[in-house]
Length: 212
Image 1: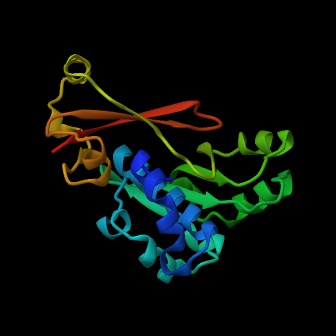
Image 2 (image 1 turned 45 degrees about the vertical axis):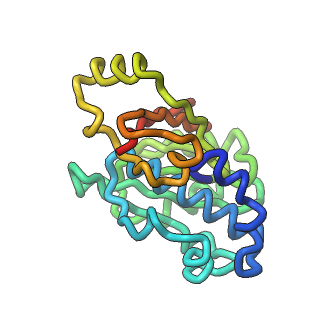
């Protein structure tokens, strides 16, 4: 996963081979990083150390064959820290009702949970999906590598967006001009990029970043 688009496609081979690591750890690295970037854009308190973690650091922390429980996240909303978003990675076997019920039983302080994101590596059957709908909070389902579609807005589209929400560009989530994505596309300060994430329940999620 990752919000860096084409830049990651070009450097993929070297990333996988970095330190002799596995393709699996690289996929988890991209997946987790994109989830963190998405939550940061949504207003959750994501530590900067998580956003800037390199592949080498990820492998050192989580290992070359990551334990899925160690990849879980629970982050507070910046504007209301009592509301938290949880992220859970599920395994490669078909996801059935029993697994969903087991997961629900593991969640503590359910009343404080603002939402749950499930990252799937396999199919979730119909009965399991119905079980998810019983959860008392919003559940979003994404598939393992959540590569967002990106679109650089024209000046007119940017102005229309800012006018619609009555904000200035600097109030949007930021992307530094030195960011790999910005450098790859030659973006300049003031330009706005739209990222579209596709999920299984909430069909599309759009976020915007302004280059500073």
